[in-house]
Structures are given as C-alpha cells and as structure tokens.
Image (cartoon, rainbow, N blue to C red; front, side):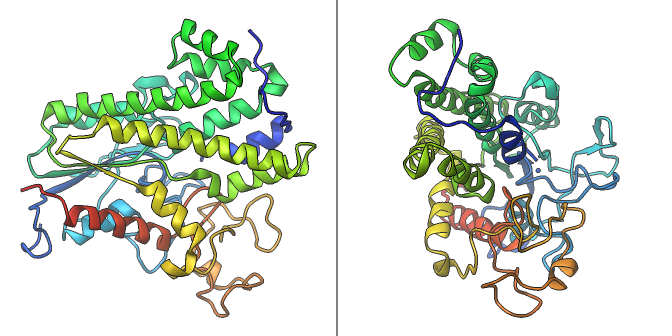
Amino acid sequence: MHIKPSLNWKLSALAVAVALSACGGGDDDKNPLGINAVKVIGDSLSDGGTFSGIPGGARIASVQGSSDEPNVLWVERVAKAYELAPLCPVYKFNGTTFAANTQAGCTNFAIGGARINNPAASGGAAAPLSIGKQLTDAAAKGWGAKDLVLVDGGGNDAADVVGAYLGASADQGAAYQALLLTLIPATTLQTVLAGANGPENAGGLYMQALADNFAGTIKAQALDKGAKQVVVANIPTITYTPRFQAVLDQIGASAAGPAGRAQAEALFKGWVNAFNQRLAANFSGESRVKVVDLATRFTDQVLNPAKYNLTNVTLPVCGAAWVTVLPQRSFAECTASALSATTPPPGAPSGSGWWQRYLFSDGFHPTPYGHKLFADQVLDVLDDADWH
C-alpha cells in the first residue's frame, strides 16, 4: 500500500536527511536517599564518552572543555550532587564496533544515537544502540538496592518517524510504513491508514506503542530485576529545537505556507505528547519510578527564556548548515575556548562568555547550561521522592 501524507508538505529527501539525521555517597544532608551508584541508560543526551578517542570523536554531544568538565551532562551533575565518583562509559566505540570499556567501575550505558526501537541497520535490538540492550546489559550486572537508575530515550525515535513521514512523497510511504509496522500490527495499521488522516493518526499510534515498548522494557529489565529507584525522562518537545524549526521553516516556505507550517508543528507536537502521556500512564502508581516531565519544562524554557536566565533559545552555538552568523563546528571542534574566541552573533551578550546562557549547542542538543537546567529539574524531583 502506498502512503502519502494527507497534509500537502513536500521536502527534498536531502533536506529531510540533513535536518533530521540522528546524531549521545556523601553525608546524609547531600545524599538523603543514600545513593551508592548512578546507572545511566540512554542516548546522546546522556552519553559520557563512548565515542571519545576516535578520530573526530567528542566526549559529549555538547560544548567540549567548558568550566563544568567533567560534570557537564545532566546525569553527571546528578552524580556529583550526591558526591559520587565521576561517571564513565560502559561501552567504547573503536571506529568499527562497540566494545566493553577497559576502565573499571563504569556505569554509564548510554550511547549517542541510541533508540528505543533500534533499526536493523544499526544492529537491531542486539546492539547497544538499542536502549533495550543497554537495560539488558545493566540488569546482567545487577541492580543494587541503593542504585539510582537514570533513563532517557525517544528523541531519536521521534526524529525517525517524522523524517519517514516527511519523506513519504518521495518513496510513496515505503519507509514510513516499514517503520510503523515494527510496532503496529499489520491489520491494525491498514485499518488506521484507510481512515481519514490515516498517516497522521498512524504516527500517533506508533508513538504510543513506542512508549509501551519503553515502559515494558524498563519494567522487565529494571523493576522486575531489583531496581528500586528509577528516574525516566520523557521526550522534550523536539519541535522547538533548531533542527526541527529549520524543517518547519522549509514547510512554511513551500506551497503549504504558514498554515501548513503551523499544521505540521501541531502534528509533530501531538506525536510527542502521545508518547509522553502514554509513558506517564504506564508508570502511574508505580512508586519505584519518577517520570520527569522534561517536555513541559523545556517548552517553558523556550517560551519564557528570561525566567531561566537564558539569553538565546533559537541559535545553536556550534552552528549548523542553515546558520550563517556562526561557523559550523563538529562537537570535537566545538570547544569552550573556540566559542569564547568567536565574535558574538547579533543580539548576543558582549564578551567571551556570550554563548554560556544559550540553550542549544547544535540543532538538537543542549549546551552545558541546558544540561544544568535539566539536572536541576531532576534533583528537584529526587528531593521530593519518598524513597528510603
């Protein structure tokens, strides 16, 4: 069956690919929960060095060498808040494959590019680019009663489904349907697609199934195997990221016009909301899990930046293909020293620290300050947790 989006948006395959490709115990007063270890599952938002050491590799998907090193990522900041040793990556990429890190005591299983529903092209569910595989490997090593498990995931999955949907005009929906079929039964999918706005409704159904898959794996590999303190971040409203805003701007500049842009943004936000609502429902009443509503806080940061001492929530400090006021840098080249030596873009604060209160490092990832805001939110949730 050929699928064509019901809404008339048309982008080149190259534009979609460029825009949406995935790129991630102290004293009782400071550690009231008695956390002994922080164990991390996730993607580039949490990856603390899987790709460092290879040509062009960077330690984190953010600005390198900031004053916050080695505690830049939200997960690293949480570990530091509990006066635990710095985190290190469980896996290391050697340029060809993933192997166990030889450094002892590492508990960060996250890998940039990981997905909840990992495609076969990336090794499928048996590869550590699968969040399910990360959870399985962590469970095999065992969960301690005082482990704090930090989990994020779904941002790359959301980008995948949006990219496949937008590419449906070029391949008659083949890639979109193939992705949908990985989580939606064929008979159900055909029924949905045959209805009004079928492709759009199918995207929401896929995101709900993705949330069920995510929650089910966390239950099976963490909760059912002894984890007692689990924090799960939902998907931020990725339509506000510079990468997605660039795609939406392309839609607005096409024949679809501003109305088409608004329609697309509402649709993709709806898909993210479908995931987040289902994720929260899956863990409703589960005392061992705290779901952090990153989406709502992230949206508020974009809409009310001054409230969070943010000076810019649209421009990535490392640049991007569509940015002309800043040089485009890979993460390996996007260092604090390089940014501080860069002429501030129009509207930025003067001085070498102009970039330090920007929200985005590149089109999809936060700056060190963005990670701090996320960590602060998580720590607030943990302060209110009734885990003893």
